[in-house]
Image 1 (cartoon, rainbow, N blue to C red):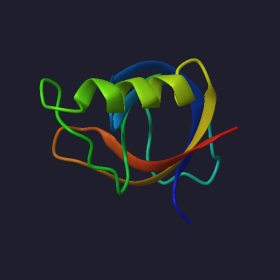
Image 2: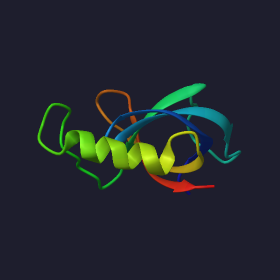
Image 3: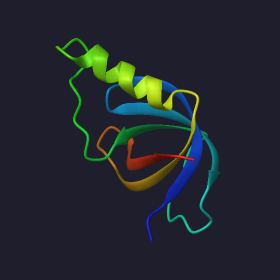
Length: 90
């Protein structure tokens, strides 16, 4: 069973990364999580900031998720310490 965290999207970094203020975690989680986590969307590869299409990708993510409560099904952490996961609206 994968770890699950629940929280509110507080900031959209770019088209595939957001910051989440954790509200709750699954009691079956295998790892600990901070009060705020940076989450990279699993399976998504948006243009990097400053690249063509980057602001459009970031805007779409903001429109859909900013201020929303979400569920993150965690698959891993990357070398930068970000949570990698699938995000769904609560």
